[in-house]
Image (tube, rainbow, N blue to C red; front, top):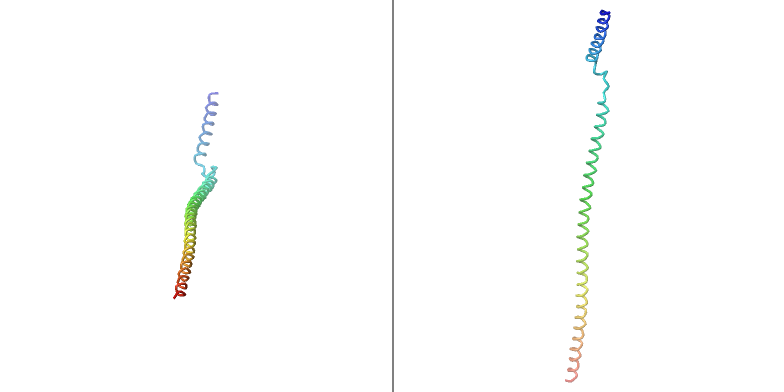
Length: 122
């Protein structure tokens, strides 16, 4: 019985050694590989990051444009206000010129009237 145990132990050890040798020497192509799916996932993630960076850059550019437009609007409002003030000043000057013209006309009429009255006296 002792010999049967040695044969059984030897057979088990032989099987273990054969299995170990088989696993160590077999081709890597037989091993399941997730690398392809991981590479695809990495590429998709990199594209998503690139797209996000591009979107952020476009958003920053749009914000800068909005700021520039806001500045232009403020400048235009200031110029419109200045134009209104200038228009009001021109209107006041025009009214004053009309008043001066009327006063000059009255003075000329009085002078002309005096000249006629003095001419009739002689």
